[in-house]
Length: 393
Image 1 (cartoon, rainbow, N blue to C red):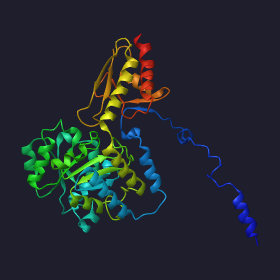
Image 2 (image 1 turned 90 degrees about the vertical axis):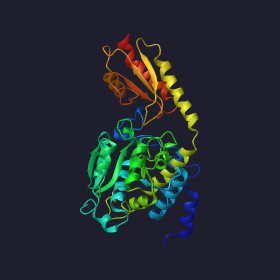
Image 3 (image 1 turned 180 degrees about the vertical axis):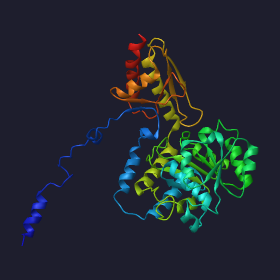
Image 4 (image 1 turned 135 degrees about the vertical axis):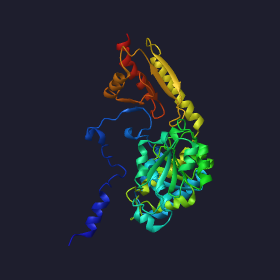
């Protein structure tokens, strides 16, 4: 038999792992181990570039959640209530990104809370199976709506929309970034849905800031609105928000995880993302947005000052009309000297690597400053200067 007293004395004498006086384990550089090279994000919150960086408080919430078991449905409910209060909407739901919200929100408009219909999706025989959309609003993410088995009915005018409404119409979809392009603008679209008793859904994934947008379109009359959680709100990248009518949010929840026999079962949101998203919204609605805007303008100035002496370089500050509506810097020069595509490539492949925004037109590079970290505006200016100066002379 082992000597129990001697064993316990040995434990007392041994330093506790991670305790006072214990050496911290070396910090691993996981990206270096994997051969992945991080970059300076002068592009913005694009999913393919891993969107935004979470605030430390969001990371703390994720770590807190990782250490306990809770009942997932109970946590979903509690987080949803908190977010709805913060945003000022009837009901809310944390989803697996805005694309996940498109799927479960569409499903909600088709099935309601009917368990048999929920089980059958995407087999929608005998159900409402059409979604009306403006032709100019068709976009890559509408596949998330088509996942539910629906058929899009494309229209261009108010008159066409009203003729398209029938007993087969499940929903009307609006892509907020395309608002300037379509003939039917957001407020009129929402009003037409109300007139014909058809739920309207606005995909506003990239449309915060400004903060007021979180409640703008539900107040306007849209029945459902989605935002990406990992862009301007700076929550977990794989999380999103679905906001709107209480009955439709309830139906969306039933069409999603953890309910097993549902079209959204794979669109799982874990407890860490739920808490992280809640804290991100808390931080976002209470942030000093005017001070943040001034900081972005300072970063624009830093980049501009760093390039001002370059011969033949022109710069202008612009704010996109919709989606990612924050200050950006547009840079132009004589393309016969070096093309914008070549500059973008050299910025990406150089050291440190810099990604710039996909340009709104040919022959320019555009710098987004809102995802830059302290000191990176100076680095971006230096890297652009290093690429342009030899070519421009």
